[in-house]
Length: 429
Image (cartoon, rainbow, N blue to C red; front, side):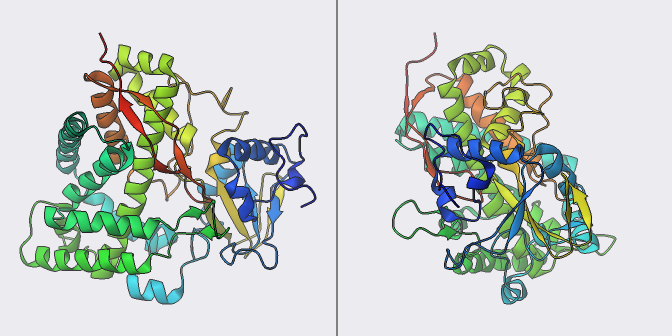
């Protein structure tokens, strides 16, 4: 790079001055990264980024960045060309790790992925989903009761993280005695996601917390064995016991799914919730609009929170056959990065993309993966959780009125919130 990251200066850099393969880019303030994405969207075709010799060891292989909404959407919906295998994160999961822990569904393609997704999807029955919705509302009410009683200073561990964890554990049938330990392991497994601002300037990528994943899967293995012998009315029992078609998950498949559900489901939802609380605090006109008719506006509010915050910044894909997208022809074996954080700010799709507007319509954001076979299985659950907790915070008295600045964990993978200081303001009258 000729001029490294002077996006905040008076000089407007070129797209060529942006290097997504350099860990320093991901330590820039988020608004400056979004400005850089806008420069890349204006380029004639997707740009190749190559990690420099001697750069952080986790920088990965050369990759093209898909930054426009149309290109990310097209790649998401063309899995025969843009494959998830061997892995959607960087570095790619090692073969020995897959053999030991099982392969995650996000890294699968074709028939293997379809079969596993079918087994899981069929267990989400209407009755189960109705019970989940009731439980989500009950849990959200209880958490806000505790907020009012305890007045903690950080919203993240007190509510944002606890709701999705409790919901998933209730859904899976995880005993209450195991949940504190699982929460600790989730933090250990995901704390290496991002870039440290101080000390070692290196990318921290998912997959380093293998010991924590192993502990979570040990707990799930015990639970699976118990449910095979003594089934209950929960998702684990349904997943490990074969139905009339003989479909069930093996122990390793269940462990891989449980880890994905916890680390992905808890992390992404708690980040979206925190961003939502912060955005509504910083945009009181939008908060008051939501409060004026919650049921009318909450659907748009959830979509706009997800678009504006984009909990997952990017996933990687591997090209399997020659194919042209966005003005560039890709060749087999090449890597591409689907930059959702850029696609969700594409000015050709979203007028005034930096504006937070809960009435935005249409809002075809790609926050749940851009469609296609890898569309997020937990999207409906995440929406239920965000809706329930925001309802409690918006409609009840007293309410959260004043928050401090978000503390973001710099990351090239997810838009993670480290902490969100908050305090209760005066009650609505």
